Structures are given as structure tokens and as C-alpha cells.
Amino acid sequence: MNLTRREYCKSLAAALVGATTATTALQLFGAEPAKKDALHLRVLSYNIQIGRAPGGSYSNPEEAFLDKTAAVINSKAPDIAGLQEVDNKTKRSGEDVDQLGELSRMTDLYPTFSPKRELPGGLYGIGTLSKERPITLETVIMEGSAHPRALQILEFEKYYFFNTHLPLTAPLRVKAVKTIDAEAAKRTDKPIILLGDLNAEPHSEEIQELLKTWTQVSPEAPTFPAPEPKVQIDYIFVRNAKRIDSLASEVVPDTSTSDHRPVFCELVIE
Image 1 (cartoon, helix red, strand yellow):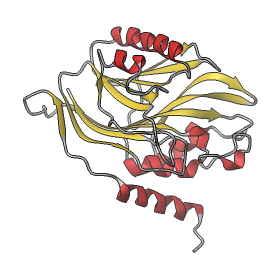
Image 2: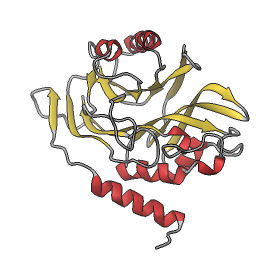
Image 3: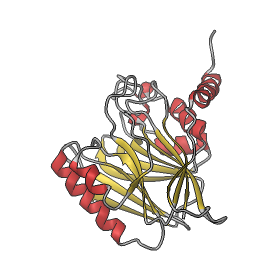
């Protein structure tokens, strides 16, 4: 059966919803029921590999299938999604293609882009899609082994959102975590959500350092490589919370849109 691209996206989104593993509500801390005005968020972390499928060519713009990426995002209906590996009008992904802008159009979410390096024709970085427009944006550039890394900091009415993609080498990741913690220490007035491709496994010094002041809400499950995940390097954390209820937490079972599987949580935070 031949499907149009629009029909393919609808069928992919439906399949992902059907494949989602149900999780029971988990109270991470806090004994009393959550208040009615508590922050309720559906959160997604997704390294989109500039819209390429596993093994896709980085030099051919025609292999950037953002409609498939959007279908995965829409399948989880997030309030906010932190994306890594995003191109903006680059030669390799199309010099007229703002990837985050295109995904915003297809998901009806507000785009906020943070570049971390220039590429032929445009920029490469990380981005956030959100139902709510952020109040402020700050991009902190960090040292990387192959290229600079970025920490995107967004402020919303009830929370802060940290989106990042850490370096490939452990010493630089340790240094980046210190930067993340320093930025978090400046913001104690409301909860902070931190997520991204951290390129670090759970036993690493970097993750263990984060766990001293952050609560991991994403599942303990491998996220990379997408076809047959063997290592966990994508995470969601929360800080500055009096209470966290996890209503759902999963690695999204998508194998065909990126080399990473997305990570999703539904949270109630006070």
C-alpha cells in the first residue's frame, strides 16, 4: 500500500501511541496530595539527529525527514520538548530550512533556538518547542571536544527549563556539569527541569554529581543507539521541587527517526 507523506505521519504517530508502555504513578517525594495549582507538565527530550534516520546521510538535505520527527513529538503531546542536534538553514539540511521553525509549524508549539556553532550556510544547535512562550532566554556556551556545546536556559511563569547536549569526553562533561549546577544555583525561586543528550552513562562521575542535587525522573533504560539501545545517555532531571509525582516515564519506542530514542515524562511538581 502506498501512503502519502501526510498519511505516513498520521499512521506513525498512531503506532507510537499504541506502542507506549503504560507506567503507574510514582510519588518520588512528598507525603501529602499534590496541590491543585501544582505544575503539571508533559516533558520530552529528543536528540533528533537533524531529522536523519539511523545511518542517514548528513550531507543530503533530502534525507532530513522532519515530518517523521514531528510525528514522534506529536505522539507524546508534550507541553515542552527539548531537542538536540538541530540545523538552521545549513547547506547540509537545506539553506532555506529552519528545522525548529518547521517542527513548530507541524506541532503547533513555540520554537526557541540556541545556536552553538556556525556551519556552511547556517547554524547548528539545540532548541525547545513549548506550549507556553518563554519569558527569557539565556544561552551558555560550554567547551566541547569537537565543537562548542550549549546550555539553553528558558524561564517560564512557574519553572525554568535547561536543555543541553554535553561533550563527548568525560573531563569536559564534568566541567559542563559544574556549569549547569552553577547556573541552577542562581535560580532557586522555582523548579528547574534539566534534560538532554548528556553522553554519559548512569555510573559516570558526571551523572553521579548531578544526582547530588537533582532528581532523575526519566527511566533507567537504554536510549542509544535507537534500533537496539545498549546505553543510557538521555535523561530528564528536576531540581528545586518540594514534591514530584511521576505519572508516566518511558523511553519512547521509536527506532526509525534518529540514532537516539526520545525520553518522555509526565510530571506533577510543586
